[in-house]
Image 1 (cartoon, helix red, strand yellow):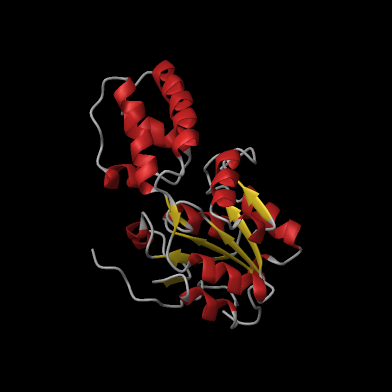
Image 2 (cartoon, one colour):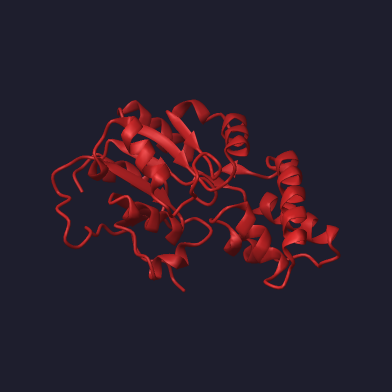
Length: 236
């Protein structure tokens, strides 16, 4: 399936032409960082512990986005007993935290894009379904944690994305209106989160699951990180 061109589409029924973006909230995996190899290695280490063969990296990518518990459940299969899932989740989280930075890097253009946004006065935050502690470790190790006024993980709030609680909390803490915020991510989970918070969404086409935008189209898409700069410096 070919990737769509970078476009700008306003949400039907919403007047979104008058306010500039003041807050940009980013997903992590597949948006800011390419963590695909470390996630696949950790998933396959967990599977090997239970005598299961490895999965292809692309398959593991398709399991990412709804949190570690969902990833583990999908990787073990629908017939796995709850006791095994709980044990596997514990093993996966410990293994992944120890190996999360072996191959993970920021996508090309991300450091420059984040620096430009911060320099131009945009507030930046991260909202991911990955555990907060691991997220902080990764961002600090990659040298960008200080650019974000808040970093929230899948265990920061009682509900994970696509529930709007995390995004609404960030909007409130940034003291902006919902229509002055933008959620940037690589999957339908991020688009649905933005919709549930009644704010705007941007689809990152370089990520793990841009094909899911076919069923949950974002307000606009970008092909490379730098494309975001022109979008947040004009009214949407």
